Length: 420
Image (cartoon, rainbow, N blue to C red):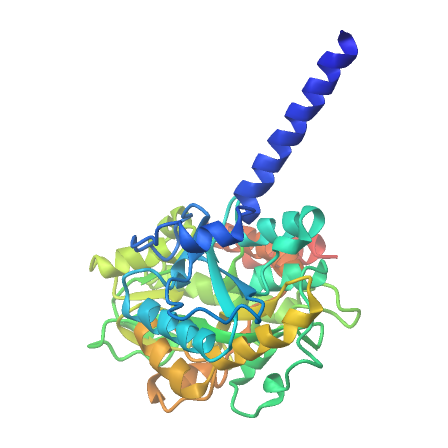
């Protein structure tokens, strides 16, 4: 009797595991989802955690002859790039995918939308599927830089080197080519860019920190950001390095001192307020700017309005750049070439320029947009996950102490001690 109970319990556990895996990687019948599941018309917000749901690509209008075996090319996307959303950029992407599908006999593109964060995020779903169900991995996936780096370093992505020469094309901004590599290996094709910049009301004339300090306007930025990207950007503009000769995260005394002294000067001129510690994201900072409470804000440029410039540097202007890459994650080598072909089709200059304008991101390919060229030509990719994990909290604490009135020399000494 007891053995029978144990067998039943074991069966129930197996069923529960299968249900969990299905919720994370979408292990529903692929054939049925393409013909039965309704197409969502809900437009997700750019940063929401929309439920993972099969997104049948509903534009296949012709049936391949029976002698041709249908191939399913799986594409995973975050909600912000959902081709079934009711936006102009989504319609462009949807049409582009349909064109590619119709030009490849017997090919069926299946799109799945997955959350950007949480247990069912793209990165978690890739990890779980890779270990438990490699057959449902996406052939092509869109990943943000930090997730892209993590996925590449943990073996969840296949290099594009050897399958595509696009990253060698001269028509990239330098920051974008940098984003597409991990440890000097090409893993992805960047298609959407972003940059941490200074945004201000158009009537203000802001070209330097002196202009900021004498403007009688407040500068708003997320002083509580645990990654401290604004402070790290200032540090780099002062000539600081984020890694030492051994490749380990590091800080240097003089650039760090100049960075914190600049913040102190902002407090003294009332351009910077200790109250900024309450804000941890650029969205919070930009919300205050959008409400008309501030004249200047440090924020990510995509989908923002106002006069946009590189952050005035201490020795030179500087902008951290982020972005999204098309990457290979499928476990079937025979599908990798068609997935690369699709990725290259999606970054065609004519299509990408039109899509970028509608989507509100910054270009990754060289552009005639003079407003952003000054930013992107000098931009560099955001630091690695390791560098941010070590240096972000240290710089965040240092900034907090400056805003609370502590002495610069003591703060610098403590920060350098922490990073040893």
